[in-house]
Image (cartoon, rainbow, N blue to C red):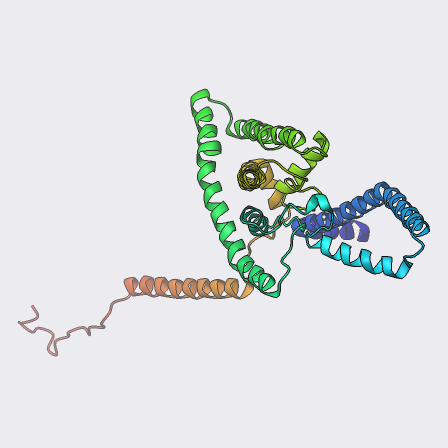
Length: 337
């Protein structure tokens, strides 16, 4: 008996807090996914890092043996300065001296990466004034960019998603959720072809050191706004039409980001995903004090209504004024007759 009551109470507790349990499972799944990614990245990349470290140590040891007049401390000092400059996009190599990081087209490309929060990190402000302006520019520009992208995506969604789905639904008589799913898949395939596969082929042809996988990797890292910065186009030695190339990449990033947002918004409007999201949301409930006030007002109104109804019923059965009977003293009053 006690076991059945306990089990019933547990079932009621779980059913009454479904969204909390779903949210707990969501958090647990996200943490496990983070751990899974860390384990895979560590197991795949750690051997390559160790190999590169050994190669650098061997090259450094060989260089010091071939140049005995140079001490290890002086070499370390020189390498530290070179690496610090390289982190800011300034290289001491002869084949990189012709590329400027802060001409107009490069600055335009940098501004687009800042406003879209891609941030490759290959170029960063060197001066204090540039860093201060970058802060102010980002504080104003990032919300402005979000507003701009939201307005553009909202207008594109009308012609790319809502009207085609409604047209097929009304003219062909197909189920609207089915049409929406098929349309979302087709739209995603078109976006992948136009903004991943074709640009990856173009980048692999223009960038001598990039293969197709590396070019596709750059497209994905850029349009997902991850922006690791390990691959940046237009930085090769003697890049032809570098200014025009940088402007084209800037336009590609903006258009590609808009296309990705349109695809994501299309999938977010699917009924299945809406129901999935509702599983993890808190249900809107009225506050307890408001419920108590409403119940009190309802009871008060009911009691007043009942009291008024009862009084009216009693008033209908009884006369309003008691009139005494007129009795003649003599019993034969001609007026009463």
